[in-house]
Image 1: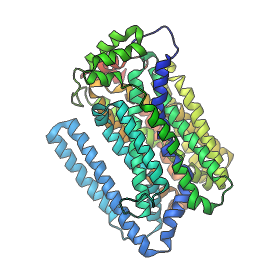
Image 2 (image 1 turned 90 degrees about the vertical axis):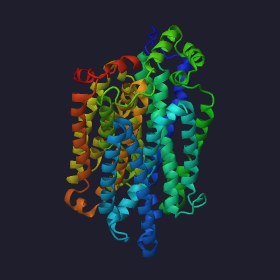
Image 3 (image 1 turned 45 degrees about the vertical axis):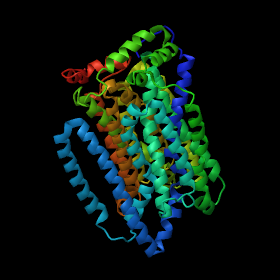
Image 4 (image 1 turned 30 degrees about the horizontal axis):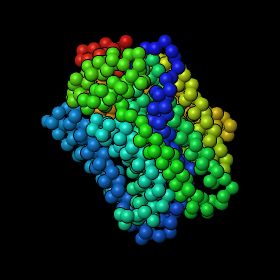
Length: 544
């Protein structure tokens, strides 16, 4: 919204609405990071028993392959739908065919072809997928986010997300008792983690979208960044919860029971989020989209009283082509949105957030020590996210993104060398904290700010392809990390340093991408940004 006000303070009604919406971000962080304290327990509970029972291992591997195949078929279907929306029927059909054939060949030769015998590599793959299975749901939720935001609305979409969070928390904690589908225990656990992931995928799109649509332009970057702060705060909260659940407990108790309490604890914030959502209004843009102008104007008078009529007219003008093709504004905005999402994950942040305990244990830390160090990482993440919140509207989006990418690249390369040279300890922790701080003040919150800003209102649903791509990239990184970090061959060659060098390289490439392609959006209304993406103007804007 473009209305300006001489006051820099946040109006109470906007603060309250933002606070409720950011609880979706908190649950996003809670749901994705709860796995951190349970990675070793899940391996001991689900995978270790397979090592001594070849028959059980074979049956589990068959079911695991079926689950992965189904998940990839669903993901392929969603991305095929994106191709149709982008390129139309004929080109979309051709692109979908190429995607399908390529996917089937890759899935067969790299995954399905092997025998159903538990090997080190397959065990690491099962662990990686079990831990990252929620990300499959995130891809589904992110893919559906555009449709749900346009059909159900932002508010009801968030209610659906909150419901899925609650069901997932209960099912993940008790996969045997709530196994209504008759699956194996590990498959039941994966099913409920996928449900929670759908909630995360929806919240990852709808929470920042809702905030961006109720916020005046002068404070939009700050308010959307609070959603990222809520994500990190949710992670820090669950790090503390995991620590207090596991503190002083025997490994046997954690492996059998403790991890259940970790997942079950999510029911508390999920219930709170659901209850509060019933007291917030729908987004003014969605109300106008559904021809409810009187309700929208009434809401605008509360959140932007000085310019309510002006903002109403701006929104109406931007929604005249509410069903415009996704390429109506050229391909630049789509490509930039996708690459922002890919690089946010390929720099390796979720390896740190999901596997911090494993990383610290590989440095020689005990269970309690690794959980304490994980808390330190979370606190650094949260602290520097606050730095981003108070600088994103002052310094702009591009400077923070460029600095953060370079700093992450240097930190990851240095961390890789500390492993390679066997110089682990305080210096390694400093490199990891420097990396986390750089991400938290740049690519963490600012990527979401940019995604919520760059997509024009009339193709706002196209944001779903960027969000879905982000979760695919997250799945790739999270699934492959155990396969690289726990590979005997790579350990002998690089002593755990290999994966960190890959992430460091991605940081330097991300910096180049921002410099060359990403436009500055600081201080512009959503309607002003829309005008910059008109065909013929995109190239000029990107170069500016």
